[in-house]
Amino acid sequence: MGTIKSLNKWANAHTYYPLDLLRVALGVFLFIKGIDFMSNMDVLMELIKPLESYTGDMLFVHYVAPAHFVGGLLIVFGLLTRWAIIAQLPILIGAVLLNFIGDMNVTNLILSIVVLLACLFFLFYGSGKHSVDYYLKMQQ
Image (cartoon, rainbow, N blue to C red; front, side, top):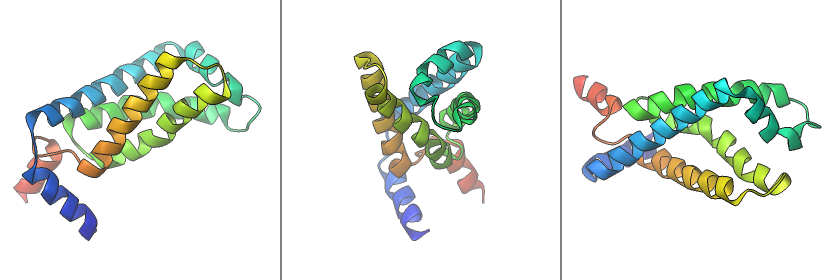
């Protein structure tokens, strides 16, 4: 717990608007991907085709879209940002690995790696000073 408090203090002392815009852009991107996966379930099923032989492929399908949808909204507003990103990490790591297991798509690989790195950054950085988390903390 002390580590998270020290990370929050550092992040609040070093907060900048471009980082907040990056957090909002990351959340909007994940939200749009969640809507895309919900509306085109066939695309998601095609993406996880290399995992058909493993158990839990339908569980994976029903986890990805809502996690992107809800997690994206939470990241946009800066509410429970670290928890939302922790929910995104297995999906993003799976997205990177699927490019190596299945057909290699360089565009999807680069996009997955960039989003994974942004999520890892905000996992340590937190939501920043311009967020609902910070506002609620100041109201205490």
